Image: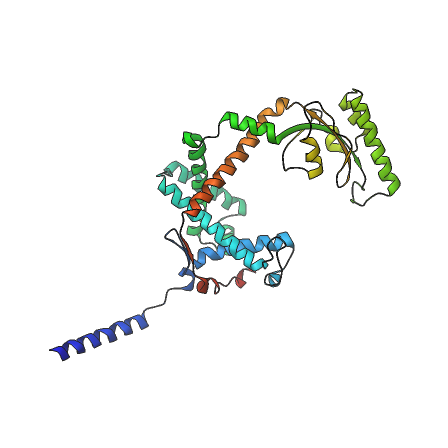
Length: 341
């Protein structure tokens, strides 16, 4: 009896071994590069993010595909390819995280939403010249139609998640007082005189005499402003920057949008004050700070969007810290993207 049982076990093992040997192996494109919060990131999906990241780096730094392993990124000291891989994984994690949080909050995409997405795809297809051109574009990007639709849907879910967080969920709403305080801190309206010390077209530095003359003009503009002359008249008389000349209501900007020297001067002024002549990269400037005035509506809109984006990124960071991510390096290293370059 015992011998018969052993023979049966041996036979079963042999059959299972033969079955496994004959069963087709899973295609490499369907193998898993990483698990993200329990969901699988396949080779096919990861390849899309990787190709996109590589193309962006190649464009930004004017390097070729052959340079990816040797070009060192100035910010991190890592190679361009290593940076592209990290960026691709980050984008994949972001997408999976949006989908998972959307489901966790029990939000829904309606039939109307899906029809709107379908209409967008149809319009994009027409823009490209028809279904054949759209298919070619997908192939060039390494996308399948199903994956394209899923990425579009996830992008839309992120928009709905944003709306829920900042318009429907009162505990996460940014208050009007918070926005106004940020406007006071990070939004300015100025008018200014700018006098070039470099060639306006080529950027080539002017000779020493021309630079001295530029400073002299800036000093004269500053002194006339201190004497009480209307600053628009001073702009008409001295300014060489066409942008400043056309800004009859002043120029509005958010902190971080201009050259550091210009911003340091602008944000140091009280309303009505004038800055001393200061040097920027291409010339001297004198700034007069104005009331925000009619620009307040645009300022509130821009600042509110910035604050929402900052808060949304904070939520994403917190959610991501709770997410379990496992990357399979042995699969990752085998991903081939040569066919796309």
